[in-house]
Every structure is written in C-alpha cells, then in structure tokens.
Image (tube, rainbow, N blue to C red; front, side, top):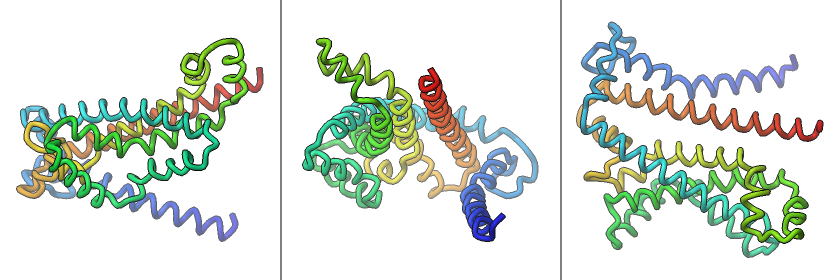
Length: 267
C-alpha cells in the first residue's frame, strides 16, 4: 500500500473513531445500575429504560417529537420534491438561483436560524405550538429532500416524460405515473433524512418549543441542566439506534435502486 493511501486511511479511521467514541461511552452507561452517570458501569441494569418508558412526561415529549418528525418529513418531502422537479426542468437562471435560498438552512449557523425563527414566532404567536414546530422543521428538512430528489431526477431520462406527454397525458399525471416511480428511492431517502433532522433537532426546539409541545430533545437538555440522570443516556441510545436504522434504510433503498438500474441496463 502506498504511504499516501496509508496516511489517508489512517486519518479517516481516526476521524471515525473520534465520532464513535461518544456513542461507545453513552451506550454502556445507559445500562448502568448506578444512580448517576458513570463509566464504566459498576453493574448492568435496564432500570433507566424502564424509568423512561414508565414516565408520563418522557412519553408525552416522545409523542410530540415523533408526531413532529412524521408531519415535518411528509410536508418537506412533498414541497421538496415539487421544488426539485421545478429546478430540474427550469432553464431560468432566476429559478436556479432560488436553489441557493433552499439550502440556506444548512449553510447559516443553526443558532442564528433559531434566533430568527424565535423572533418571528414571538410576533405571530407561534411559540410553543405544533404548527410552529412543524413549519420550522419543514424549513430545516427541505434541503435534504431537494438534494436527494435532484440526484434522482438527474439520473432520469427526460425522453420518457416527453413521450408520455406526447401521447396526451398532462404534466401532473405524467409525473405520478412515469417520473415518480423511477425516482421513488431518492424521494424515500429525502423523506428519511428529513425525519431524522426533525427528530434530532435541538437548538431550534430550545427556542420555540414548550408547554404541551415540548420536544424530547428539549426535555433532555432541561433534564441535563437540572440533574444528570442516566435516563438521558438511555434515551440518547434509543435516538442513536433510531437514526442508525433510518440511515440503513436509506442505504438499502439506494442499493436497491442501483440494482434495479443495472437490471434494466442488462435487459
């Protein structure tokens, strides 16, 4: 192996190890029998998972987060898919420049976005409401959907759409019958990434969620501020496992899409 490649592999390995270390530490602590966070655990127990599942407050926050994630992901997918379709079709420089605006949520520091959303919501009465939370997370999830769907559309043969329309089918029906089935893996990937984004979002939630609409991540932050409870480690482990499963679904969807393309080419 060449020295340059060896150095590259070693650097990537160290970066991955640095990213994995927090997970490696938190997961064992979630199974600790100790009253406070300690590593390594003195003994093993599932008491903190049981405490989480038995707590009405934690369950209410979990319900809010899951509802928020599902609604935000669905709405962001619909809007993001439509936006990506328009961006892919349009040759207008003005329309293409709008793509920059769609990606601002991932470019602008999240704390600045959170402050801006808070100020707007304070003036229109959307603080601590599910509507406000959904709108904010749709904005944050749109870039992921647009990026994913654009990749799928760039691989799609536009001649198929032209043939469909030449046979009398309107644009909307052509999209649902001809285009959407072929870019479905990209749409699903965008949906799943938007779901993860909404489920794990913390900074914006700290500013705009509260009361009955307090998200799980905000409650976790509040609990850490008041008392270091190992229940936090249990919830963090569950969130990490959920995110990992969703990413695996995205990878599986992409692999199935590649396999389908290869099969179509062979045919």
